[in-house]
Amino acid sequence: MKVYINGIGNISPQETWDNTKFLKEVVSSDDNRLLCVEPVYKEYISPIKLRRMSKIIKRGIASALIALKDANVENPGAIITGTGWGCWADTEKFLLTMIEQGEEQLTPTAFMQSTHNTVSGQIAISIKCHNYNSTYAHRGVSFERSLQDGMMLCLEGNKNVLVGGFDECTDNFFTMLGRVGAWKKKTINSLDLFNDSQEGSIGGEASIAFIIDSNKTDNSYASIDAMTTFYKPDSDEQVNEKVNEFLSSYNLSPSDIDVVVSGNNGDSKSDAIYNVVLQEFPEATHTGFKHLCGQFDTSTAFGTWLAAKMLKTQSIPSVVKLNDVNKVPSKVLVVNHQNKENYSLQLLSKC
Image (cartoon, rainbow, N blue to C red; front, side):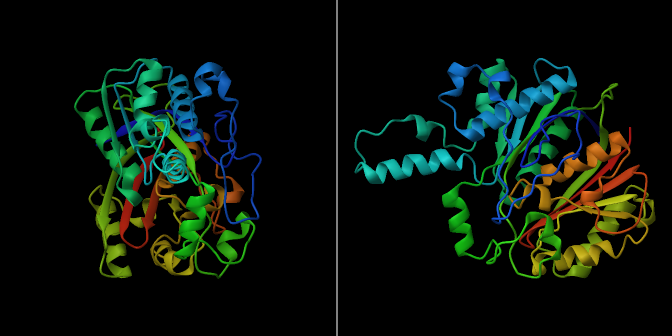
């Protein structure tokens, strides 16, 4: 099930859309929410078309175009995206207008752009791609499902498959999830996320696209050797069993892993599981990423981006390190879970 990442487009709360940089300057926040650092969209999309697009559609199209250019590909063999909540701002806009105007004289644009598959469709329209197009809305494993589908398509002979994940964090969305305890009650600086003992995390958003293929190129970042997901393990020990089973199925042990990218999000209950898993990898460099992008359903895509960049540059930025072990990355394990329900594992290797 091995594929290669040949192009990346990442619009996130960091300046990750510039593939020549790798976390040289880090953006932080003091209001428990990290919002995207936007590129100049007119460099990718016609200004006339931009006027009718919401932010998430702009990000989705731009990240896809950046990834295609990075891979030197004009038209992908398929477009597959994952999203937890879809185009939330457009959904809000339509529903609020419906309330304010008493369900009369509603413009249909916001409704048409509110569906989960809007971004995939808009990417296809913008580059005139008539190939396979799909969107997965499986909350905490939405990106993983898109990646899994893309990997299977590659194995069937499809070339240059575009996979990605996108989610946005609007004011109303942030407020609503805050009411159910998703975020920390007291504000912190995002870079202090892993040192705060409060329950809850910080909000985030991103739009991240990858071009994957069964063939390696001169620009390949890394290979994705395998990935798997599992649901609601009975205990922390069973999580460790799943991790060890995953590695052993590829004739690997924890000592073979150079870097572990874990989805620590600063929530004391959530991170307890990661701490148990990381104890199995005492010889590896431990890294985290949600202090750079925040917590959202497809945040695993940011972890995949981080792993791929580390493998290509053969470097580990100090801002992501969680321990003092210094390893040159050759094999990287990405571990993430959402609400102790949806778990995912990815194994990436240096090309």
